[in-house]
Length: 407
Image (cartoon, rainbow, N blue to C red; front, side, top):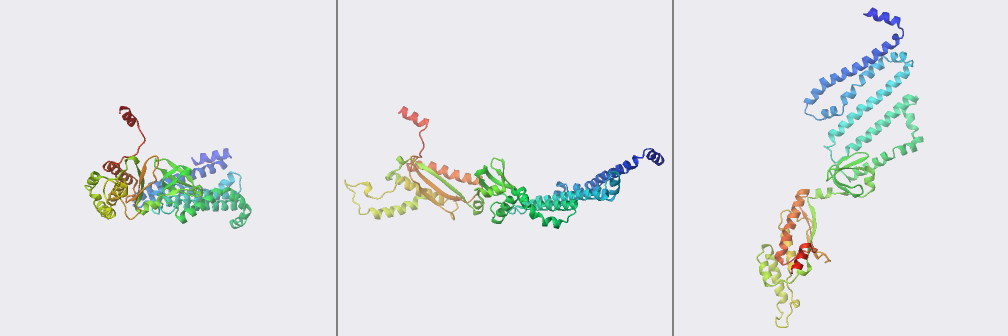
């Protein structure tokens, strides 16, 4: 068999050049496949059995696959003279090409390690935009690798290249303009804690309203409440205004600010019948006693005769009593935070009636719970207006017009 191959090589001299090259390529490819198989069959199963998640993330980011590329590069480097003789190139040229490929592979491996680090620790350190910092580090590594490659090709030391960067700084600023702006924006965001992962932000300029799910060097991803994703350039977010709801979430309360519009024509002084009905409401008992004492002192010298007019004395009104009821009801509500602003007030009357505004804070800031608390409060208060001979204002509807026609 060997003699046959030898005779063929003597008969066809071109094979003396091609055959070693083919064997080298085949050996490099085979070594790559064997290394990959060994890593997959020996190391990966052991890693999957471990309790730590970091090694699983390394597999996910193809670290071991990328390491296996080093084996064929080492073989090609050791037999570079075969490549040089068969490709009619100098050994130094082949070594330069192999060195450049080695730099690319190492850059690729470092990228996998950094990506794994980000995936492993970004959830643990939610308040730090870890991904943006890692991306900055990746850019620095790419720049440094580029300097080494240029140094290898030009024969100039990397330090000499760094010294001459000032001459091309304008070009670099133009190329990396967005990166530099994003880097500065990231520093502002992280140092001032303007935005953190899982913050609820509103950015009307970008149509974003939801949770921050990713803070990267160039972009910030916001998952809106309708489950769509809005991608905001990092430096653009700093340039425009946005609202961060983190303060509300950390305060332990969420504001309820809503009005009930009362029909002004239903507002009146309280007569004995109304006062008798009010006395049956437990939440008004202390209020009515205080008012009874106060009004008795004020009206004790008032003479009631044929010339008496109610406006000459002080009397309770159904709207004032209703407002007192609202205050007492909210004071006794388990879901209202009394340590924060507590206000029930009248707003200026308008063509839509007299607004009674409730400005309080719930003690549960979870969205669903908050909405349920707010709805339950106003369900009760709107239904309660009927017991104070008050009407809720609303514009005429078809039902109202039909009633008028029938009358």
